Image (cartoon, rainbow, N blue to C red; front, side, top):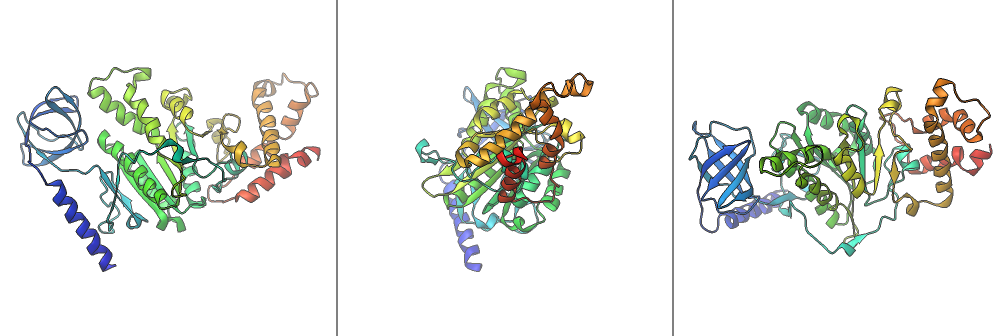
Length: 448
């Protein structure tokens, strides 16, 4: 233990020595408008940090987000203090690397890698680029092996595989966080990395104390940044969580990456883009906000070289329940599957409130056998027949015997809901999920 701490300390000293090499340029604040600061004489690259001295002697950290002529455009990482024109801006030597390694397991850290759990400093001597390591696209392996997520409806009807990227989309208060907690507790993985981006401060502590109270806690890394933090910090937290997952994948481990939520990441980039003068396009989102989504999602997946995988779940908050929201639509177009949660099912007390007809796993056909596929098809056929004729049934306009498919869907509607329904603390294995589906909705189930 002592040797590991000495090694981490030596690594930190070497990093500081390397960062302090070269001339130290001091800038001056000359403009501050709409959360964007313009600094002269600060010749550093994008992503570099600085410290702005306020009138009352305090320091505000900021990061370079772009340039306007010879001036650096900086975004503060914390609430503005009493800054004044001509304030001194000192280089902060912030690293573009994320601290990674086994020392993070079981820890809760902030967007800059600082420990939040009061368990002392992070002991690790390894780094990974926040922006990830670009590799040949052919090094990404195919999704070929099913993953057990412990949720019957997902295992049986929306079968996922190791290395798959899945979007969980829903309006507010429909059960996304509860479903995520259930998946973390029961997923068959080696390591879980959770990014809580833009959450309420109360929800962060609630998540750690209730969702991570089982055996997975010691194998989970949590990166948290509340909603009232700077948009730059929210983006850094998402990049840090992904970088930590990439490191564990490079070691050949099966990693579960959960980002909650992708919408708040897009909101953070929207704030930055609009401050820098980008034109708003769809529903007020500038191009950079929507372009960020595929760049983040594409970092997950399988790695042929190491044999490791990142199975990623991204929650997407549909503003106003609109499933055609630009963020929902962009995410749905790039991921390998999407799970839509229905407010109607949630109001009926169905958990998880998965709308099977609107949800899809794009890799399921490649990783399940024919008998399983037949049962999935039969289940979807009955679900769709009922949903498409729901209004007629509720109004009493449908007469029994008019359509055998609708008659069967009505007769088996309770069976459909019972298969989807599962307690939030219950776990159902992949084998049991598939067996129940084939028994109830396979060829033999239909004959019965």
